[in-house]
Image 1 (tube, rainbow, N blue to C red):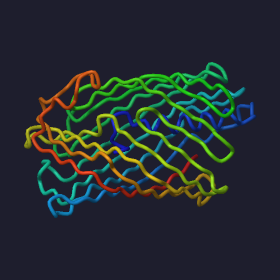
Image 2 (image 1 turned 180 degrees about the horizontal axis):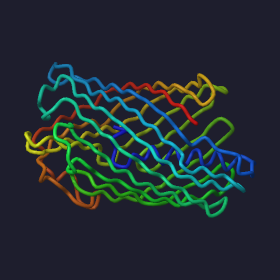
Image 3 (image 1 turned 30 degrees about the vertical axis):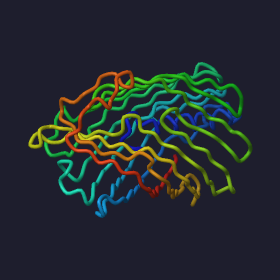
Image 4 (image 1 turned 120 degrees about the vertical axis):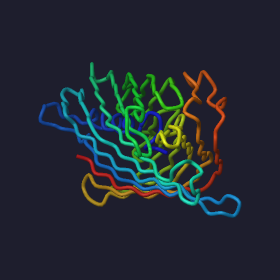
Length: 309
């Protein structure tokens, strides 16, 4: 679940990519404004069959990110991004096995970058998220994620980042090292990603068309708190997937994307609210005992629309 993964590190990927693009631009006056604002909507559909019964997981997403600060001078980019992200999760064919059929996540990510030189930049982000069935909204529905990355640009075509991410979820706290990469391998081929969360290999077919391969590993998965009438338990959803995608630029800054692939890990787990493991991955999340569990791999298809400004 890309939009409900522990760190929402897709924000980091976008930020790093636009930073690299801007720094390759030779402009030095303050009137130049790289396009780091974004609006995205998406939909994913993952069907599967359990005991001859058809089921599926659907997710609708929407997000907007607005640059409050966007300064580019002498090859250095400083910015402050603020946004809102929404995700709606629907479980079909599972009746009331997991307490509810629909779950929601609303986050307010804030990302800041300070460039010390053309080579070094610090990127930090904080992401509070309300994630639940929205039956009785309270402070118990809030989870928190944050990360800090030092970006090092070694050449015009290669930069990397090192840092750490922290997330406090309903199942406990996660603290992991994170490595980012942005590599223009050739004129048409590029590799970008944030290990161990998400990687993307892209090939430029033409000025408007891109094909590629992506891997997404939502560390810990997305978690949702249920209402008090169900005991304030929580649902954890994990989908680790590989996909092939095609991206087409319909107009300047406006593109559509379709993709298809396979969820090689797909798990739904309902846990009692007291089933927690602090400081994963140092402590094993598998020590928890679920009230209900569904494990089934399967295909996934996705579509999306993006606008940059």
